[in-house]
Length: 284
Length: 191
Image (cartoon, rainbow over all chains, first blue to last red):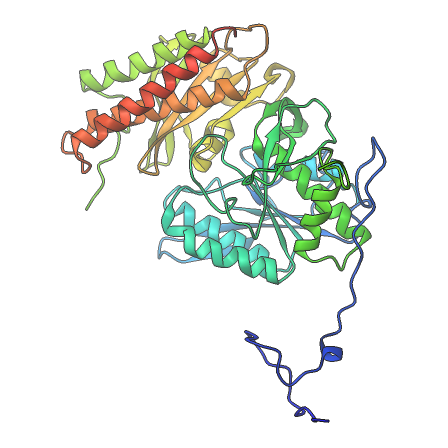
């Protein structure tokens, strides 16, 4: 019998299993959730799961948002530096309304989740791709379990950085739920298989999600005529992939609250199995 | 190379002014809307400036400015995504400062970015599109977004006669967009 050398687990990239036995890499896992009964949502309440909304900020005082655990803003300074700063106390949080709308949807679907906000819109547009990238990178490195990104960029020069960042999130067990563009243009990061990509379906059922058998996009959520939270405690109705995305992000939080050890690929599988149009064991 | 910018103040160039007015008039006609407007981005002051208006507010809105990072138009300009919203009058706080200054508070609004070469030039808005058998939705928003892209190409050509992209390529792009717009207009004949 060969004795394996007593080596410290390798750091960084693992090219092959060396110096460790299968027992060393034993992994305790959660099984996939059961398919929900008709009319019910998959998973738990979102308790214990941190969801970060990367958008125009969030009005934490809106009754449909129910507060946020943290709020940050990404700023580009005159010297070109980009920093993520905590939001000042007198900052309203959201100047556009869109991030508040997304946060309200996450809260509806996963009422007990812990919401966080990082604002990447509302400042000057110069270098906005860099600001988006910095905000997403910050969220990934905070280790948020779920990151809602109802935004994308059409600029191909961000492709590589966003791709690497999406992979970093995937391997670090942060699931990035990314919205497809509302018009037929190429944009990122929703095109990457390492994220959960979402578009809207027109069905009036506010709790239905569907799997797209011809991805991308991989999933469809309710995104037509959605009543959403807006500025000043108000609501309005709006349509778009933007609102289908936080619905799916909320589902991710629900699933993870019940089964926190699920990996991003299992989570995607759970979304797949719980989609209304997926029939396991049906006729071929 | 320094990119030329769209005019930040109401254009004194009669060709540009006519182009913008034509775009907003056609957008309003396509959707049977109460009003339409084009706001261009002033990169210096980071404001959106009303450049052309059709219908409500036509007489006094031109030249008015508001912060570019705020409200629905601000999100559209910042994200590069179109947006459609409804039930605005029910929302007591909907951009009231802006809406009241325009003298008209719409109930529904569609807005699309004027984007050329990944650069946001401004925002095209349509207020209170005419109700059809179904309310304006994502197909109509896609049509507006396509029309806005075509308008942005035309605006870039009009503003910068020495455009960096060859004119033939610009023409081809405009023709492709026009064909797509015509297809979508045809698709919505029953709207």
